Length: 378
Ligand SMILES: Cc1ncc(COP(=O)(O)O)c(C=O)c1O
Image 1 (tube, rainbow, N blue to C red):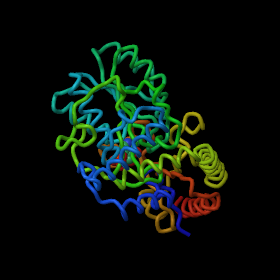
Image 2 (cartoon, helix red, strand yellow):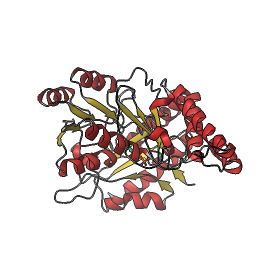
Image 3 (cartoon, rainbow, N blue to C red):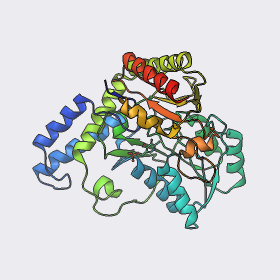
């Protein structure tokens, strides 16, 4: 048996997405920028996809801009949101994805912004009072706070952050890479100026994503070139990817509640089974269903010999998962997220992340293997 519990890293392509993409690959090769029939057909597919996505998210197609990835969408929002609006202060959290954190740190290093980190607690929950203090103390800020943490699953309150940003006239970017297609996002109600999506996190293709730019904010292009994406992102469009992404989102919305219940059931079951079978086991981040991304379970195992071999041993045992421990003092290898929440560096942590394709039998298999490994290595 081989179990894939690393769906926060990437998800397998849905066969229906693949079929849709394959149809396009077989029949369309035109450049969407060409004005002849081949080009027009390709352009129609892109605009149809944009319309599908906008409809699902309750927004206008004019606010959706296709990108090559979640990383590019994050970089566009951050760099252009800050530079084009002459912002000199940004607020983020120490647990953001590196697509956000490294971008902001590079801008700070270049002297473009002063960067403030909002306080978080031991589960990775934002201190909203501290966020308000930072907003109050600084002139117009750029706020980048993710919706769900990709390592520990802790959710932020987008409504609350949106209200605070509105009250202090801040620009709000939310990295929604882990939650697009997993929760119902109504972009007509959200106060975020920028939200992002990566196709490969929702059973869509890799190498495609989008940035949603709320009509209330204008930015200049991040990538200059041709007139693609209404002059906002140069580069010939990834037509197969875009069609696949729209199909993946459509499927995700059609079956969302059913998948949420199934996956949350697997996560709760795995927690129960681990507690019953592995003495001393614990969980990193929030685990309550309303405060935690249902696809992610970050497990802190008890101290053991050769703890850095745990992931390797799981792999050998047929389990694909990912993780890492908090950095021990003096070392910068390890998880910046676990370090930021103060997790113990001597306990190995593993992130198990689930999808609609996983089963209870796979959870039983993984728990049995984990139990064996923990018993051997104590
Ligand atoms: C929260 C978060 N943001 C951004 C990204 C980057 O997305 P991509 O892999 O499409 O560049 C990821 C991917 O792991 C992520 O989990």
